[in-house]
Length: 318
Ligand SMILES: [Zn+2]
Image 1 (cartoon, helix red, strand yellow):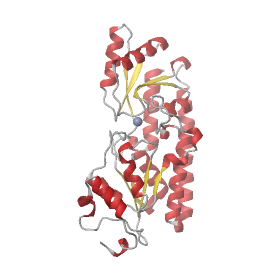
Image 2 (tube, protein in one colour; image 1 turned 90 degrees about the vertical axis):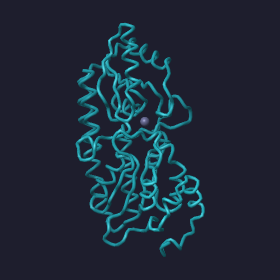
Image 3 (tube, helix red, strand yellow; image 1 turned 135 degrees about the vertical axis):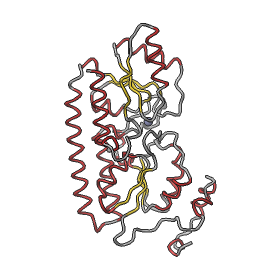
Image 4 (cartoon, protein in one colour; image 1 turned 30 degrees about the vertical axis):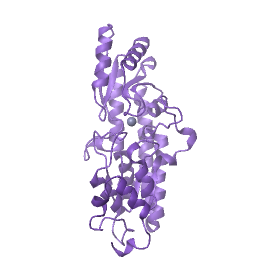
C-alpha cells in the first residue's frame, strides 16, 4: 500500500469489497486507492449515469477528468458494478451518483466509498417536497429527476458545490461554468415548453415502457402512463398491458414510446393487444429515459438527449 493509505485504516471498506467478491481485483497491487488530486492534475471523477457526467464535464471543464460507468442503453435500476467499475470508483478523487434508489445495486458500495472520499448523491440536493413517490411502491422515491429541468438544476448546484469543496482554488471558474450551463438548461426549458404547445391539449399523453417520465410529465404538462413501474426490475404482467390499452382507448391515444434502456417487448405487447381490440396504436419511436446517446453525438449530451425526446414526442403526437 502506498503511504497515503496509511493515514486511514479501511477495515470496513475492505470487508465490503470482500463481500462483493472484488477484494482481489480492487486491491491487487495496492495502486488503486484514491488520493487527493495532485497540483495541476485534473480531478478524477467517477459518475454513474451519463446525465450526471454531462454536468461534471460542463461545470468542471479542464479541471476534471470524468468517467461515467453506464453507457448508452444501460439500465441503471439493475446495473451491477463490474471489477473495472470498482477500480474506477476506487481510483476516483470524488464520485457523483444519482441515488434515490436509481442505482439500486450500488447503494451499499456508495455508502462505504463515502467513508473514504467525497461521494455525492445528487438526488439528495433536491428538496424533499419536490421528490415524487413511486406510484407502485409507497414510500419509495421516483429517482428520474433529470427530466424536470428545474429539479436537475439542483444537481448542477450540487456538482458545483462539491467541486469547490474539493478544489477551492478554482471556485470562480466552477461558478462561471455552472452559471453558463444553467443558462443553457433554462433555454432548453423554454424551447421545450414551446414545442409541447404544438400538441393538442387532449393529446398530451405520454405512454412509455416504464415510469421514467413522471417528472417530465409534471414539468411539461403531459399525462404519463408507464407500463412497468418506476424501476425496471419488476416484470409487467398481462393486466398491466390491458390497463394501459384501456387507458389509451379511453383517452384515444395513438402512440406508445420505447426507451433505449428498456426492451421493446413491453410496448410491442401493447401495440399487438390494442390491435386485437381494434384500437390502432403506433410505435412513436424510442426515447432516451435512463441512458443517453453515444458519446460524441448530440444525443450523448444532456441538452441533445432532451431535445431528441421532445422532437420525437411532438412528431408522434401532434
Ligand atoms: Zn428508470
